[in-house]
Amino acid sequence: MDFVNKLTGGDHNKQSQSGQASHGGGLMDKVNNAFGGGQSGEQKEDGLDKAVDYVQEHFLHQGAQNNESAVEQAKDEQISDAIRSGFKKATGHDFPIKDKS
Image (cartoon, rainbow, N blue to C red; front, side, top):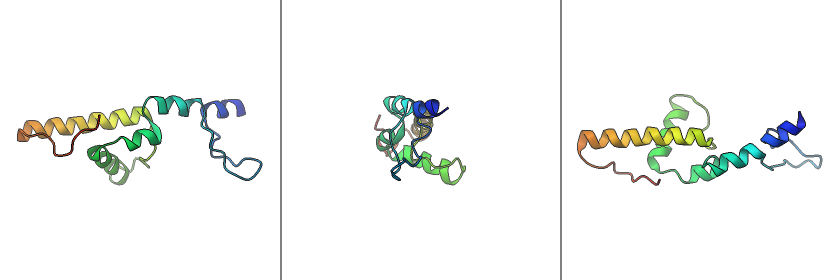
């Protein structure tokens, strides 16, 4: 079982024997980061994506949104794209916050 936890990164918050927390990501963390998830993906979000995260965290109570998977980030991008599209249809103008992607 330890092998599976190490492979998937499930034990990366455990204390090592020296008393320091180990932060070596597993295979799933590396795959997630490669597809645009994790902290690196959070840094690439525009203001509307951050607003979507805020609503999900504080109003819908979906938990912390500061380290989302690549799938969650793609879902947030679809939501923000739908908001942009609806705004343009309703007003005829582009959404004031530019899309980073």
